[in-house]
Length: 433
DNA sequence: TTTTGAGTTGTTCGA
DNA sequence: GTCGAACAACTCAAA
Image 1: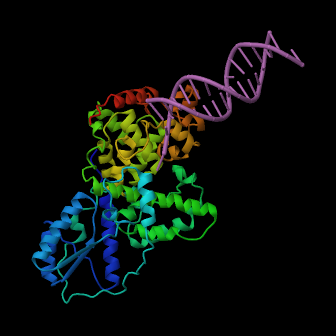
Image 2: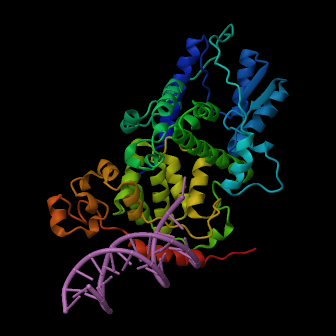
Image 3: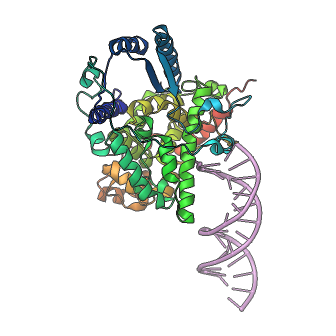
């Protein structure tokens, strides 16, 4: 099972849409590959006699290294290079502190008031063209589209591009924001914004979302909007953390987690990746990810907890799987999510957090609607039993066409026992000064 | 953005 | 009608 790179598929669509948008105002997208960004930009600047280059300011270590190299290369040919914070509500570097925040609530209390009411400037309708256009590689030459074509599930679910992003934002603000915050926790309800890939690819900015949320409404709507501002707050926090702890995408913020007696069980890992753990909510989530390149956040937490706690597999392995399969795979958000769930990162909880996959299903998918959608072999099981097929009476299973161990697996671990094993392994880790 | 188990209180039901 | 066992419902602390 190789990697899928859902986000490569997205990037292809995103670049195609950008090129179309640019062409509509008299410009076009130039694609160059095969060398470092610094060399390629140096070349392009010579080809076009450009005097000034601007770019978005990055956050990840790779982006920052690239910016430095580009800056050096452009200065050498006396071209100005300026970077701007376009990705975040608040630039992480302006938050002055002796030691960086490590807990979300304290971070957001300090940073939310700094989110200014930035003025929005409309995109220009016309762009100046050079006298001759520099050569561009074809978009297809980047090889971003999967071969063989497995992207049908993605095409059915998503439309990349700025226009689609604006539409998704409008639809969300008009509709889902008015719904009960509880509904947004239910994976079957489809009430989340689904804006994450647009935010990741810069087809939508956090400021645009922030402003869209800032509008009059009932008390319930304002509460709901506040919860969503908090989600943007988590996104800010994730980028802030990665900026301050550039190694955290690979290393636990709490080093004692390296001394946990992790398991490296490839069979269990594979069962998790394929959605064949025997826990219906976990399997539904993992299959949603595989089919659509996305997973509901509530379920992300549950499957991550299952991998790290129930299977005792290091969070980095799960993070890599998400990285390869999510269309919204974002280094900062992915890192924070996994470190938080593993408990080795930015979490103020004084206890080891272990999700119970059945309890989560009872709370957030009580009717088994989400499970039925992604685990069709269980679809005919009546409602209480679909959450715990291994406890269903043989007759009920037979009537639903479920043959445990054949059409659907028995649980690969017993959750209560796995929980105890995890708690023991975690408390046995070596905490050094 | 959690779960579990212990302890307490409340309810039911049969003798 | 009363008593007490059994169990459900609830709260709370600890991991």
